Amino acid sequence: MGIVFFRYFLKKKKSIESTKKRSILAGLVIGFGILFLLFSKKFTSFYNFPVEQIQNQMTGGIKVLYANIYKNNTDYVAIEELIKQENPDLIFFVEFADHHYKHLKDVLETNYPYSNSTIRSQKYVGNMVFSKKEINNRADNFPQGAWRYGYFSVMYDNQPIYFYLVHASSPSNPKFFHMRNVQIETFFKDFDLHKEVHRERNDKVVVIGDFNTSPWSIFYWKFAEGFNREFVNITRSLPILFTRKSVGFPLFWSHIDHIFANKLVFIKELQVINIPGSDHKGFSFWIK
Image 1 (cartoon, rainbow, N blue to C red):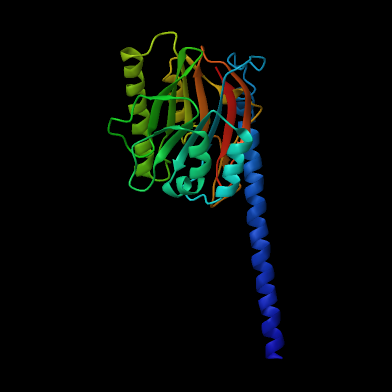
Image 2 (tube, rainbow, N blue to C red):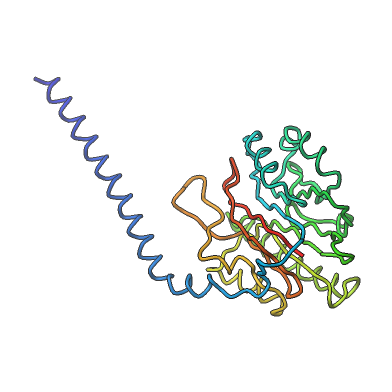
């Protein structure tokens, strides 16, 4: 009799725990639904934005593949297949590590003779560019924090296109939150300096990367306003966009990867693509 009662008690306990879990999950889904409704107006005003730089009828250009590859990503075969399928002229990777290069070395060395990297952090290379075209490195010779930015130019149609590849720190704790904000402030100080020192007024400039700030944050708008309306976030042309999912909480998605371009740049065929093994989505597009 005692054994029967004990089994009944265990089943009852499991049933209660299961009900609690379902209730919590339902509450979270409802909560996210309410938040979505509250922010729906902001969504609709941010996305489907008329971006003049999107010119899908243009001919020629340079094809770009961008991705936060994720530092612990070991899906090497699928990443190699993605590179072959997209066949870009420029590859922009952030969170690129030595083990990635070891396994992707053959396809990269065979097809991309030029490269550009940021100063290494203690653990990872950080930002990495592979190119079919010659790269003019602009900013590897100055001290920089881990995952800040790379700066380089590529010639197209006898004109340089200047690129910044950014990866600000993830604000996962107060220390990194402060670090990200300092990195963004430093970026704009350098950006203004570069503009004054060696760029012409009619030069084409693109700022792309993982900024670790979303359009629903005041820090995003501080960053966007730092361009003094000279640049537009090209991703605003999309109907909606989430580029990063939380590994520990897959229901949580955010839009933290962005493409800012000045009004002299033209882009076509902007696509959001799945990056095998990564917690981020990437972009592919043509630029001229």
